[in-house]
Length: 106
Length: 435
Image (cartoon, rainbow over all chains, first blue to last red; front, side, top):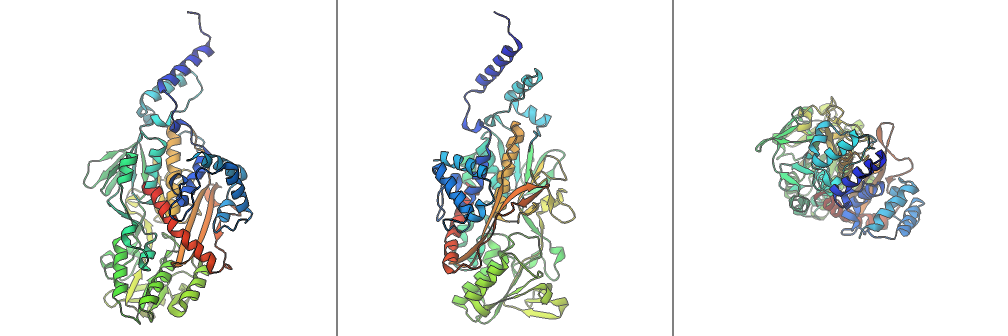
């Protein structure tokens, strides 16, 4: 067996650890800021953004359309009731991350 | 949240995957984070209300193999929020009760229906009244409020059948509703809001409106009198606008500076004495909402300070008085956040993410948190306050330029649309909390 360089040795340990750990599950990815912001939305828009009763669903929206809506809300467009007051609390970057996360929900 | 707070004890508890990473760490390999699915630490949550139940649910959502135990005395939790809708006569009390079966069955959360008698912080155990002590690696304390009866003259907890507070969900609301239903037309209902800080700042004023809504229909010659130690209150301009528009002279509110502050109550003849005892107000029904403090178990465990509330690191909600404990919900001091169901729910999510981040060693990203609060003055007349919070200068502060109240200059249509959304909010948040 050829001798291993320290780098190859460490790489092999990392790989064997990965094998021991099995396939990466969804819950093994680190929590993202987009997901954590989205959780705030679920208090009004239902778990996983599914909507409930009179509250509209926000899951599975096209992310560019969601960004457009939220940026419009920031400017008071589209006649929101409360969403303008929420949208102004977020940076555009946060809105983009949120929209990307919501777009992946079914 | 930028550092891992993994203790040696946590590390040992994490088992094989932890040992593998430890070996890599010893070999000088860059630190690897632990998989969320491999976490199996024991988390005990005391209190199954909006804050506690949310924490339990989101911990299991993030890391399904965590061993999460929720200690809550009630098998059905009745929300205090939306209780005023019941007093107004347009919502059944039963619809405000929530069980724990879904948290137990769908999220594999152990729910122990018992009262936590003692928090043994040194021994890392919660000692319930009728069950064996429960050991934990992390403890979340979410006991809600307790009433500070020692600051009330003339009545105590034994008098709440005669003078109900209706500031905890369920039965206290039924007592108040039945008294209002039983009274004669032409009498007076007194509502006494508490001094700050207290749970649900706009709640007493929504209550005055919705009791008036019921009375207007059934006993139209009856008055609602607010006797308040304060000179101003949450959403004041919007409430006053709605009160005047819908109820005219039916509602009178007396601020503290004009003799409104209750000094003493007389239970036997249903009187409230204000203005140093100079003014005596008789009523058919008195709703006295007592001054408040953190839930007893938190105070007993020395998690509160002289204020009666629990100081926490406002980034993580870790107790500032004891290590390894988080305090959330109404009991915690949380900067600009009001004591509301919505913030309790947000805090539960924040703490769940924080604990998972600490156990995995993967820092939890900073993220804004939120409050939304609907108040009704009639079933078809509502307004909101909204806020987005960030962590700034060591405290939870509102993001500048965000949040605020519904506009004062909007008409009936706007109020009606917000009233349509209010039950949607309730449905959403209670599903989010109780599964």
